[in-house]
Image 1: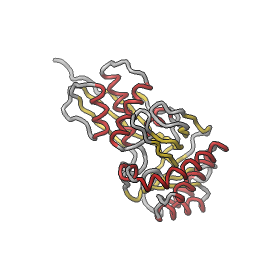
Image 2: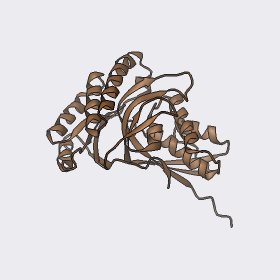
Image 3: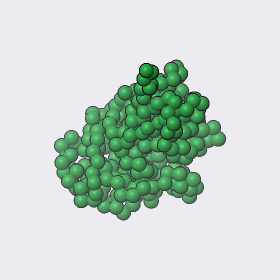
Image 4: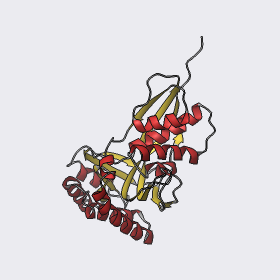
Length: 282
């Protein structure tokens, strides 16, 4: 009796963008964003079974599959991060699918080639602009140039705790298609990136993220109130882009309990740590 093929699995970390600059381009490989974000040990696990009949769970993942194979396959995604809340779930699913399919089909593609395929899927489906490249690297990632081959840098830091509360879902596609939003976002994002590069620390990343969220008008009242409560408790907080969610970092390493307690007044608190490994097979 022939045993069915074992599913191939990959993991991609969550990515919370603090601030960004929209960089459109006719070529989706070159399109993307500048900015900075933080990857988490929490994320998305993707299991691929060749010959399966369930198909893909979303358009972005389907786009990845169609670029890699014409064979039927089943993709099962397990997420321990919020969906539609600014945690890069679609990018993680796309990147994990690319990694898992490459392994399952012995395609022999490089990590950069797989990142490009997942990035194109995100850009074309308007589900993200810079998550995939950051998720490929891991850490607190600065995107100095846009696109699938973006010039990336990391802020040097230890494994700090990150907390969050989700208030509501936000449509990435609607905001990316809104020219008036881009007119507010880009000048603020450029200013935040310029200031971060002068002092590339996690603390300054959080300062610039909150300045960006407030200055663009993207920050909701709920996020603003929660961020104030976190800062009163000794942490630093801002809004996850693009989502109606607050994220907070224990920058001192000693305020975790106080931060979690402060955020619990606003909803269910999620918690993870900074990821430094990026996407990988598991």
